[in-house]
Amino acid sequence: MRNEDYQQMKENWKQIISYGPRPFGSDSLKQCSDYLTGEMKKLAPEAYQESYRADAWEVDNWNLEIVSPAPRKLNSYLFLGSGASDGFEGRLIFAGHNRIWNMYVWDRYAVVDGSGEITAYITVRGNGEAIPQMLFTGDSELPHYIVGIEEKDFFEAAVLDRTVVRGCAHCRKLPDANCYNVVGILGEGDRKVVLCAHYDTVYNTPGAYDNSSGAAVLLEIGRQLHNYHLNTQIELLLTDGEEFNLVGSRRRCQRCADDDIGMVLCIDGVGRDEVLEVWSGPEPFERKIRGILEKSSEHFKALYKCPPPPGSDQEPYYSAGIPACMLTFNDQGILHSPKDIFEESKFKNMNVMVRISLDLLEQLNVIKR
Image (cartoon, rainbow, N blue to C red):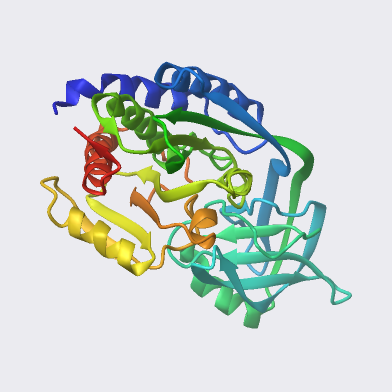
């Protein structure tokens, strides 16, 4: 299939990006959701926007800097869900480790004031520069910052040097915010297959890769499915709140707990590289996926992970015992970064992702020509 056949996908991709950062609970996310609902209705006339109430979080600004012995500003972000502070100051101590998505374990430091009380936490990202991530320490009234791996040696030495830091965090929790999933149904039958992608972002990026690309790919897959016979019902699901502990997919999975779901295919991030990460399980299902992809005529290098890590929207379904597969052209260099903008190199991989996904569905007997 030629690239020019995917122009509608490119237009959808550009439009999704144009809404800018779309954190869960934001006005820009609702605007994007309305657009996506309109596009979904072109594929599935009975498509609808499904709303849930859930706690969200937003940030205005923040600061983190070294006071002594050598003053400088630290490049940092707040964790999603961080507590707030009008200001704090204290020395650094090593506070153990912070676990992120049960996938990463990164060094964590605490800021201790003159009375010995912890007033803030700072995590050093172990695999790249500072980016926002979800906080999983439970509700915290204290600020939680993340800095990049380039600060690792400095922070290790700072504990011995009794380095003093200060900062502020102007952020807040948003109780009872709206979470908007977009749902379209194709085909018929009591059993269904779920195809999903999230369209929310973290607060500092328009998320062209993560995951405007996946949302546009999902819509294109839905458009292409009209050229196939469907052997089962297919749910096209665009989720909100993936970056905020998968709130949209968790709520949808709960609502569909009594449905007969045969499998879930999740598209999360189409980056610039040619390494296709394949998170799938259980193991017999992973072998089927591997067998199909190894015969693909598309150009990519597959990296398989089984069981699938918990950091994307397949997780609630997989935890419920449903076979699941997540596909991503991972791009850690721009993940959750302002650098994640429109680039043609991503669009080339989006074309590949559409074809790979359709081939998987065909070989798994979900669809046929």
